[in-house]
Length: 442
Ligand code: EPZ
Image (tube, protein in one colour):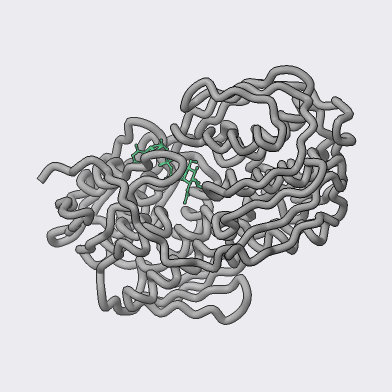
């Protein structure tokens, strides 16, 4: 049966503790922040642990909602997941009772689809919910399904679920994507590690989190290698062993806090930052005129006084790594509201990642959204407090940034969005002198 088009459903999230942030802006942030482990590495690493029945141990795992959702999903499958200490998780997928990833998991977190590759490769079958779309675009998974089929899987689509099976065993093959897909690449790698034979994946995503995953898989005994910038090759093995891994630092969190320092005219030192993975972003800060210095895994950002007009407008374009990360586009847009002149944003990856700018406009930003992929920002603009709501993870963090730079008080609803991917964001901001408090949002 041909795949139906990816569908959206009005899945009603169970009532979460509705919560808002009240932010008193206009205060320079000063101090030091330790960068947490990367959400977009940790989720795939935990999934990769299901490729073996032996225990795997992960450290520097960010304590965020998306990790809790994946852990709950793994436990529902019958996988043993221990949480012996903060930021430490152990996974033992010795036996799995159910090979079923339900709607609830997929609705809460699209990344649950990363379980397709490892479960199919290890157990030969899985029923997994279509994660549908979310706030930043349709987010289909057709390329993931195509990749599994290229490795010999049979996948039918019925009533919102993919019924996947690998008669006998997956077999190595050539996976050719029409364009870069991060999780598509990762699902293909995970499936190929236990397939019979050799697999070549092109174009393979170059995101650093993919290489963090490859490092862990090699520690498990997998034969995976990036043989060219956009080529990953895998020689399948019969079984893999347990291993340990420290999750790489989160480049998106680091970038978000760098912008917080820049737009409040403060001075913030980021420790344990993945400096090598932030090249394109640091280039943008330099072009804008932000005083940013790096040494080893430390980034020091000194912001210009707000309203000083010290920053210069620049055009930005998001691209697959090593280009500017789409996840840093919205935080950078907040910086551009403080830059003198006209800045253009070209969002090439997702089609709904500019809508949130309407909320930034309510804080006083002067901008136009030309279409789903283009926006223009005029600066510098004095921002003022407003009442807004978070629509998704990265836009939510960016509204906090706007509120920190704004004169006066802001009320930001829907903070569960930002809890998905930023560990203890308000504690970290409070430690930098921000005035931010949580309110129950009845
Ligand atoms: C990963 O999403 C990240 N998520 C995203 O971060 C990130 O923005 C994105 O990569 C791009 O860097 C995780 O790693 C959990 P893609 P992913 O497949 O893999 C289209 C965050 O805030 N596409 O690289 O889902 C897709 O619609 C999140 O942390 C298909 O058409 O992104 C998009 O236009 C947001 N069919 C483009 O490819 C498919 O089967 C790139 O998406 C898959 C993707």
